[in-house]
Structures are given as structure tokens and as C-alpha cells.
Image (cartoon, rainbow, N blue to C red; front, side, top):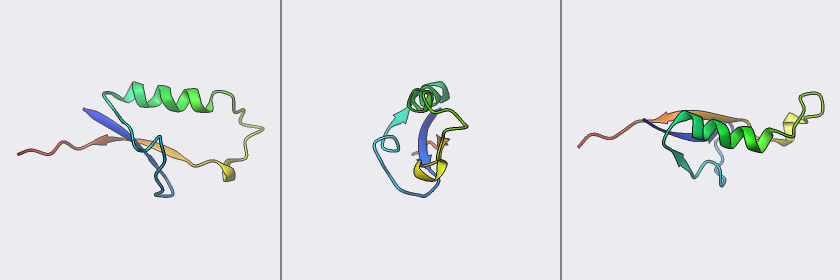
Length: 60
């Protein structure tokens, strides 16, 4: 199953344009982006919220 990352606000960016072969690849990308953000320092209003979702395959 393939996965993609979407933004909660519906916008697109470089991250949302990618697709991933598995959930772990998508998770690792987000983990690398946010690894330096500490929960107590984060201003979450300035950062988009991302969600990893499965891509439904289209049967022919």
C-alpha cells in the first residue's frame, strides 16, 4: 500500500506532493522535519499539521 502526507488546512507544499511506498517512509520524513522542535518551544499556529494517509489504488 502507498501513502501520502496531507495538510490539515488543505494546502499543498513540497511534502504533500510526494508519495511513499510505506507508512514508515512518510513518518521518517516528518520526524526529520520536526526533530528539532521541542513541544514546549513550538508555536503550532505557525506550522502546518500533517497527516499520513493511505492512497487508495484504482482498479481498472
